[in-house]
Amino acid sequence: MVKSIVLEDGKIIQIVQGDITKEEVDAIVNAANGYLRHGGGVAGAILRAGGKIIQEESDRIIRKNGPLEVSEVAVTGAGSLHPKYIIHVHGPRYGQENVEELLYESFLNAFKTAGKLGVKTLSVPAVSSGIFGVPKDLCARCFFRAVEYYFENYKDTPLSLIRVCNIDRATTEVFEKVSEEFF
Ligand code: ADP
Image (cartoon, rainbow, N blue to C red; front, side):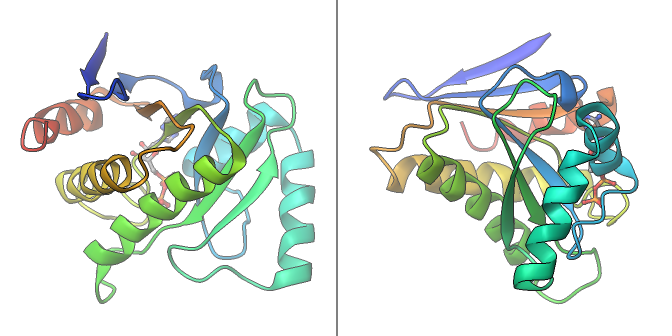
């Protein structure tokens, strides 16, 4: 089941339960670490499904630019997956100072990057809410705050659909509930 929220200007936000590697969108966001080593969680799933080229491209970026700061993004292709791009974002760990602001910035940077790439449809997981330990409701608030800010301030963005896609029902339910505080 998909929960859809349609904004006044026609932009669409969707909340779906599913495997993000199966998403038929222009780009997906990956919950990455600073070294873009895609081992576990959603990053591991993306690598297994999309192929090792994603890790090779990631390694080249790190060799060239060094590790990502928290809330910084890097872009690779998506290997054999449907999307054209993967936007890797280094979310914060729970317990770190300013975690809420940093997670909000992480989502916002991912949206800004997607817009600059000409991405029209984007799917995003609940960054930092797995191995990095951020509570799901806090993660959802950062996400919707970033969506709201982005669509309000980037009116001519090509991005017309942002989906939050999570593998588990519990996370999806939290996002559905928190969305009611915003839209
Ligand atoms: P982080 O290290 O940033 O916390 P994780 O990958 O551990 O990132 O988890 C982020 C979220 O992604 C969690 O809610 C987790 O359940 C979810 N997740 C894991 N695998 C998938 C997948 N294949 N598709 C969608 N969501 C996933």
